[in-house]
Image 1 (cartoon, chains in turn brown, blue):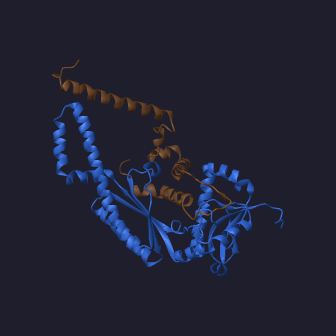
Image 2 (tube, helix red, strand yellow):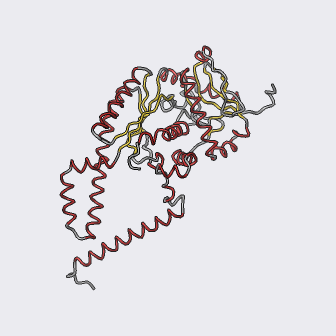
Image 3 (cartoon, rainbow over the protein chains, first blue to last red):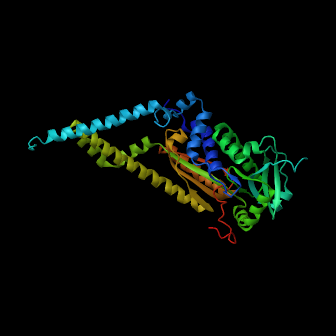
Length: 108
Length: 284
């Protein structure tokens, strides 16, 4: 898996990204009577990529981030909770160690 | 036939000088509305490349609904892109953004009249030119190794950390990692801006763009540079790509962990914008 050739992996999918980036976001904007404002081209590109790639293919090319992104999945939400809890625990340990490091301090 | 009865809208792809439109033929091309064909519509010495589209798909509400449908949007966006490339092969064009639609011919004529001078000016500026996009991707692992070998203090710091208490180690490591990460960014930026300086000299114009997130690229290496260059077609484009190939070869030889990807030729999407008309309305 680690020896995948990065060029081969990306050429096809990159052209999709390039096209959308350019066509949806760039080009001359003139005041047509109807003008769609596609607000978030980046998000659209992601959505379209997901549509194009089957889920397995997406995982293979590392596009399975949505599983851990709270915006897209409840599993992601859980992971985020665990991460936050983990950080809180680290802070707590840090505090405790600080206390241990200064035992002579007369505390209340 | 029943032209007066229909209330088709006008989807506009691009503008070109009337002179070019009369000498070259467009041929029979399917439009963005698959039922319709691409047509030319001339007014005030400018020719619009259009497709008459049905309100069922392109009236404001319907169009907005359609672009939410990723499959629909993707197909239409690609059509827009492909037709633009075809046009760019033959004509000098002002490429419009996807989804510019007029209610009728009168409205389109109104617009062409209003922006006439600006559009002609842009057409003369982009004549014979094309856009090339360069994206540089950097393998952070390779850069991290380089940073560590280049900075003797990092080894010393690591040694120092290993002698600390467990809890202190965690935070000291975090800090050191941040330092390394910052150094990596500095290294990558230095590399990219050196290359950019060289390419800018070849270009008529350049626009540095946002680097895409890994979520978007789906790649393991991170996008470190994303820029479009406006180049005179021909020799300049050749040199441009030779320079990039040269950097790629060197990076491969020296295992620098850089991947160069250039795409083009694109119509001058980034360099055909004009400001509001000089003699225009007083609103803003």
